[in-house]
Image (tube, rainbow, N blue to C red; front, side, top):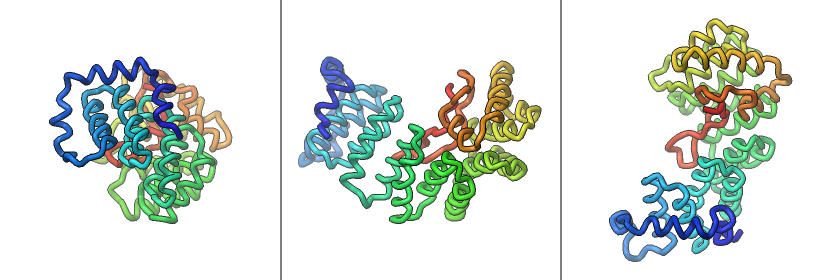
Length: 299
């Protein structure tokens, strides 16, 4: 794959040199203590990348993870961190390349397959994501895989199958409100608005709910044509100007057919206001410590 060359292509040799020189005054020794004297140089570069990332330097972290992979292409830590970071900075195509390399090396690792599937979903390529997610499910049934597979199915209009996967995930992880969030949106896309509103309301009232979950309720109400209620919910987290813009957005979404095109429009943020809460389908992030926002209404 040529990770060393990709550093130059993506970041540039000058940027790489600046990034490393900018780390000269940082206390890497303290950060690396846990690695032990026998750690490989690749492992040390990963830990250096973790440290620079903790200091907010994404450019240098990417370069360090790339360098680690140039030395050890099988470093799962570097592959995982690099792929997630590439998604965070908007380099979705590079993230897919990274996760594809990981999947090529670990074709029977469900977590790796799920990460690749998630990256493909984030780039609105659900058809390409499906085989990887189906393989991951065959290897290890988990709520995380069920959630990702459900989103991919919703994006191609297979809402009933998507809902079956969300419900199966919720059966083993009833506390996972992101699965319920996705199920509510899926129900709305399939036209079952009463069930969608009931479930989205339950999610929005959860102690674990965030503005994203509440705005999914507003979107579900908007898709159902219940604009007055949608405005009331949206106003909990945004000002009157943004609420009005969201109502126009919901009207636009209602005009899009078929439902798969509407789901893809939501995922791509097509026609979305530029100042609003991000909302829509949610999947677990690569390392399960957070979320990748799949349905990206720009903020």
